[in-house]
Picture 1: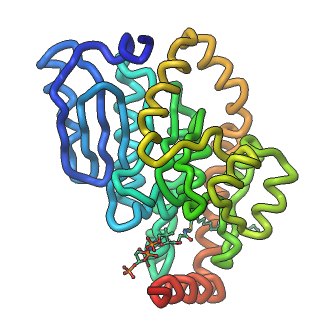
Picture 2: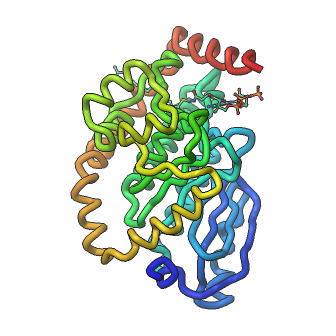
Picture 3: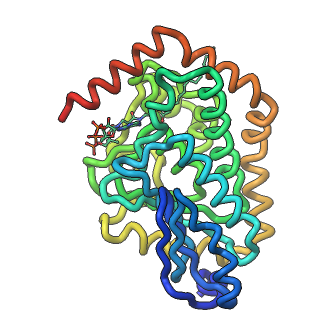
Amino acid sequence: MAAQAVLRSSAPARLLSGSFYIRKGVLASWQHYQSRRPFSNEKVLVELDESTVMKMKNPPVNSLSLDVLTEFSISLEKLEIDRGCRGVILTSAFPKIFSAGLDITEMCGKSAEHYAAFWRAVQEMWLKLYGSNMVTIAAINGSSPAGGCLMAMCCDYRIMADNPKFAIGLNETQLGIVAPFWFKETMVNTVGNRVTEQSLQLGQMYPAPDALKIGLVDKLVTEEKVQSTAVAAMSQWLAVPDHARQITKSIMRKPTIDNLVKHREADINNFVSFITKDSIQKSLQVYMDRLKQKK
Ligand SMILES: CCCCCCCCCCCCC/C=C/C(=O)SCCNC(=O)CCNC(=O)[C@H](O)C(C)(C)COP(=O)(O)OP(=O)(O)OC[C@H]1O[C@@H](n2cnc3c(N)ncnc32)[C@H](O)[C@@H]1OP(=O)(O)O
């Protein structure tokens, strides 16, 4: 099978602690296996098995903190330069939640320097994932608001658990904040302009069946089958010659990526001046309080 051809030899499944879990299928040798050990840092788990899987593992809800984002980008970069890796499945280690999006506590009560570093890390994650040469498949095994939805949209193909309790969308306006232009452009590239305009203004979260209807996800399967379906889809995508697929992906995505690269510093400045406003800090605080009260 194409996926197996890509993931060369077999190696023991290996779990390493952290916020992500990368399952790497096939290594040429034990030495090669050992050379992948740098994945075993604080926030990244590496499992060496039949397929390459990055599992977010930041309890309780996979919120994307500065540490998690940094680790994600480093891990993805390592896979990117590994010629043995042509595709990655992105999923969550927890049932019922893919990712709660950006860690709201990173955007509350911190210094301007912290906000700038945080936003640069969000940009970096997006640049690396949206611009990846690898085939990227999101196995969305639970809810996925805002930044979680962004990560899923960065992937080439999205499979979601068929459960109307799981919802996905860019809900920023519900928090009193604004999805930046490159979040918007990613969504436009996924579902089109009209659906994006309405979704973003309303901060709409789509239950899985509705997400399928608007094309925000590509396929629904039962929760138990999300990952195996992703593995099957991966082998289909990997059957296409890499160079042709990669150039095509680049033609589709480069203008959007270039737009952020060009305006990156201005975007950071916009974020910092927006998020440091008293009114925005208040909105985020109210939202966090509501989240805690709902229990
Ligand atoms: C002129 C131009 C100007 C424009 C400039 C624009 C600049 C840019 C502006 C800013 C852009 C920011 C973009 C932001 C993107 C984001 O991603 S914001 C995050 C949005 N996320 C959410 O809204 C999700 C909120 N969470 C939930 O809905 C639920 O928690 C859940 C994910 C559905 C899971 O539910 P459940 O399993 O019931 O768990 P809970 O009990 O709700 O939560 C458990 C604990 O986790 C905490 N938590 C949840 N989400 C987050 C989060 N995103 N960040 C931090 N913490 C989170 C929650 O409070 C609980 O905590 P405890 O009570 O302490 O246990």
